Length: 349
Image (cartoon, rainbow, N blue to C red; front, side, top):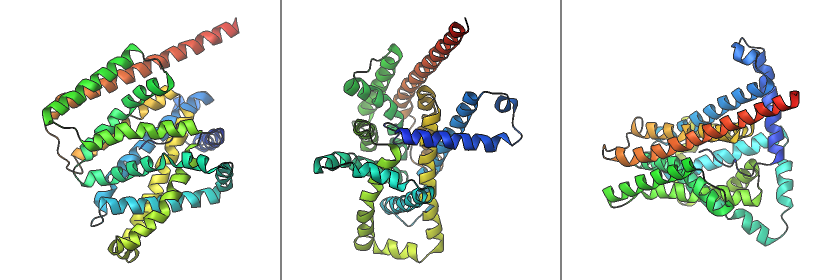
């Protein structure tokens, strides 16, 4: 899940820049193609951003199939353990990097109960999405959930129009129309639509919009969400799933697998946030389509979730809508490059 890039603060941007510079220095010592060695700093940052975006999406794909490797733990139990593992890894990372106090200071600035309640409004959405991400692949809803992630960027376009008054281009309107017809045809075919698809595409945009309105940075928001979840997760294991607790604590394999789950989760989100800071918005947006494509392929192939041939028509229309969004992003990127080129020419004259 490509999450919490909206509302990323300046400190995250500075940290990402420092990370990029360190990584660039390390990579510059390796034998690399001319496109890296002869390119400008801006080009190298773009390449690094693309690499990190691809890496984050691949990691999210691995996490999507992770539940299937942890049987007999249920999808819900894997979700609970993932939240605890992520919280432990994130706290450890922030402590070792000396950045924990920085995020705590931001939270201390919240004085009133109303401010704290406002901060916690998006947390249930976040937790429900992470639960669905781990539950769906092993409960026959992998394809439907992946389709929700395909629809997510289209819904972000609609939400941006409604909440922020953003103007839609013809390609964006066409994308929304294709998606609407695709969803409508699926409803007519099945006389219903998957709740998993609706939950992802209808509620996840609200999470991003709320965090953006709050001005909460990516890591700070994640720290809040996981810290709120941690005591409930522990209580769940002790009172509702003691057998899961005994199984995990008594097995080196499960302990190692769950530690890996936490590490992969934090690494996936860290690389995703870094990529969002290094890449232009349009490029980052186009790269984000890699994740649902991977989830869809994994759901059908590795996890064996059903895909009927009759679904091709409705899903194909949704994919056409996504193609329109990608074309819109490419067009904007070309315009931006042309504008920069004209600016350089004007400054040279």
